[in-house]
Amino acid sequence: MTHPLWPLFDLALRSRRLELRLPTDDELADLAAVARAGIHAADEMPFAGPWSTLPSPQFERGFVQHHWTMRANWSPDDWMLNLGIFLEGAPIGSQSVIGRQFPTFRTIKTGSWLGLPYQGRGLGKEMRAAVLAFGFDHLGAVRADTEAFLDNERSTGVSRALGYVEDGFGQYAPEGVARTTQRFRMSADAWRAVPRDPVDVVGLHACRELFGAG
Image: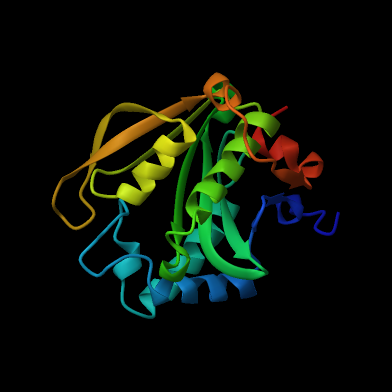
């Protein structure tokens, strides 16, 4: 253990091409630069809140404050793990895993983004699969939820390809206009019903109790 005061910094998920782990503060600056360079087309808004279109320096300050806030507000009953996505050592995006009242409901929710140059290469599916493996196979989750706007075909395509089933609709208004989302869910049984690519999880033992996972 190299971070005894905050062992979550020692946690890493490793898939075939990617490493998912908490970014350091210096890496947060690099990750913010990836996001600032572009996540989506100018006429699109895939997020529930329009954080990706804020002007500088509000964008950069809000970006790092969000990550700091998730660390500061962490509890075993209410947590949000904002993992940086690293490809060949370079940050390319972020994958979040959220557990609200996790010890009671054993449900995780996910959200993510990738820099534009890294989209369309199967990386979104790989990083989502990595956190699903983490939740189901290592934390004991029984359900995973996600949602995306109806026009976000890449996100909904990843959900369907991984075996989620549709679970109704929601709404957000990131730019003041109500838009419909498609909700998805997956059970632990559905996750285990088909072969999955291996994911190596290191550093969990020292921080397991921080997830309310027992």
